Image (tube, rainbow, N blue to C red; front, side, top):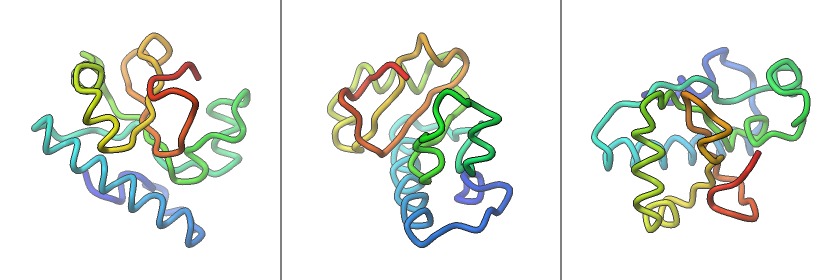
Length: 120
């Protein structure tokens, strides 16, 4: 994965969004090294219009802040690693949508929620 994968349409970002995406990339890269596999980004940064097309029920998605990514995880390798290594979830400071809500992918975000593994 390269940082451009998180903003493939090269949207113009605010300074905060750029910083958020850089931090998200840093953490994902560490996770890739731990799992020893290269990740495929399904969705990274979204504009508010992108978000309305993708999920109109959640207009305030962390994707719009550059604080979330959806990674291909059809076999659940990434999810299984994280659920079995909660210390790494805390160390990397990720918040993860529960797998039952994300078939075929994993949603990771750096924006804090009430639980590390949460319902969308």
